[in-house]
Length: 335
Image 1: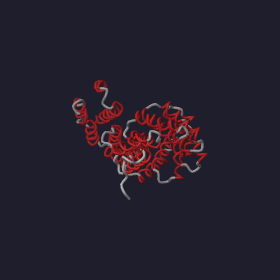
Image 2: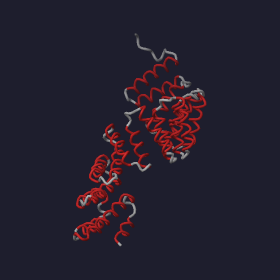
Image 3: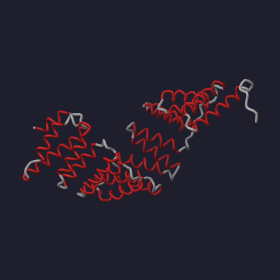
Image 4: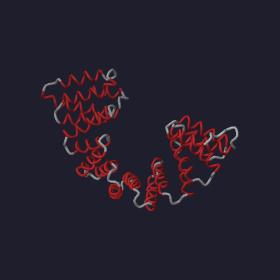
């Protein structure tokens, strides 16, 4: 086939060529080139709603939400009945932090496509951000009515119900999510957390373990498992969990704090001190005086160890809560 002559080809055909080139470059990950080609297509045919939608998507991926919003709006100016464009517009508003406009866009999409379960679920997650949890639950339930096997909606519903302290209903929703998608680690973790809130910590432990089996680098599940084991007095296993968290997230102060507490419970004072040193390493200069104080306490006679343990526990709790930002706490603990 002879090459297309851009000088001779009609503008509509040129726009199609640029669209094809843009899609090819986008598929290859050549985003800058794809944007350029979509823009060239619009110069040839300014009524190409698909090009505006594609540009909105690409700018969204770059985190340029304001520009993304503008392009989605142009697509809707051309085709006001395009519910997918409203859906994308809602996501862009959400990324930009304008939750009210995002909710309005989702509702516009729902008005045009009332049988799309994904729209109700996405609106539900947005409503949770707005602290409108009851309304979020209603949207999750509507999504489930439209798609009875919608595992993600059941998972979202379970978490929302737990926030409302409707724990039995939350358990039912999360169990359904697991039944539908037993390969999703997050459902087990969330189910475990609900059981903890029901004072069923022992029952939560195997759920956290299953989450970790499915996703070995699942930091939150490792941490929650450690907390559950710690609550049950299984400090050796708990310490191992918290140590794993610090390996996955070296700046996780909460994990260092809980790891130290489990080590103290095991009587491993020197290890607790080492854990503490690792935690404060980024702020060693700021907390050098506290380190000297703690080392002095740890050097005390055996009959004063209980006091040393208590002092270390207080420090680790403060470390976890303060994130090193309140220097006056250090002074307070010296008194």
